[in-house]
Image (cartoon, rainbow, N blue to C red; front, side, top):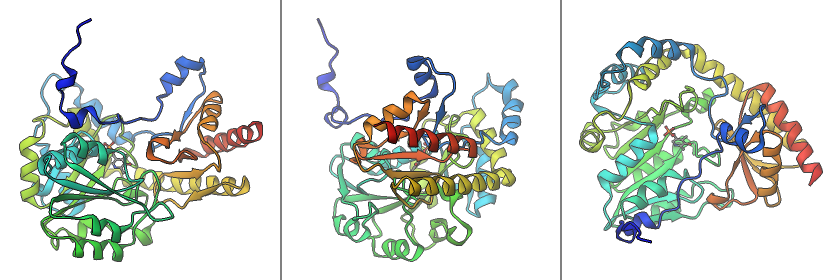
Length: 369
Ligand SMILES: *Cc1c(COP(=O)(O)O)cnc(C)c1O
């Protein structure tokens, strides 16, 4: 049989391990014939999208035959006001995943090097490896956090980007303001510092600082955010980067001309104005997190304290069978063996009812096995 010339593909691409997404509800429904399924696997917002975002999408329906605004003017203007940054500093993406990949494409070549932490977001290695650049994965601290000193030491003359997720996924770790500030100051100015704030909106008020405040101090700083998590728009794919205008200009050269679709642009702009929805998402997350922590403690399970909308739980034994047993009860969580954490499961925070159901299912599954 004749094969396509896959042996001629870019060597770096052939070596990539594909991303493993959380199992979709429809897939589990197909496999097990279940109808009542809860998904706590991808850190989505259990409240769904903001009603304001939904009406904004309805209003766009008549225009769907037209290309979207390739410059995303209205959303950028709304973000500019919301964040107090210039429109020319904003790069919109098809999810923040898109802008992370654009950053890698714009700054990395096979001769260069990028740094990120062990147990950091899985998209960093993917984005780096696709460019053929050398991936500098720095071992985490004993508690699975970013080892900023070691990351700084890993920076060499070839390093072009350092990725820091704050809060991080899948661990939920949060780096204190002074520590990240010191890191930004110590980092050579010719290395891009990408601070991924995908879970920023879940930070409690007393910790709700943002690296956006430092953009004037560090021209090499890029902050990424998303509408996929607290804003409840994961299915639409929209996120953004805020950077120096010169970095945004570079990213603009390589992004697809219409990388954010019309529904996503309209929904994100409306969601940004719905602060009541965001507050509700924050409250539900706090309550669900407290309930989950209480139950895990009662069951004798350890977990990493999390500033996100998920909890990384140490099952104290291989987590694969527990994951499978939970699936049979209609509960989808996230195995993290691909992160090198075979004994852990990552559980997204759902509604009160979902968390009650999950805690019961977990207890049963632990007793059965
Ligand atoms: C979910 C997540 C993202 C956002 O992904 P989108 O592409 O915007 O949906 C980015 N960074 C981290 C750390 C995440 O967990």
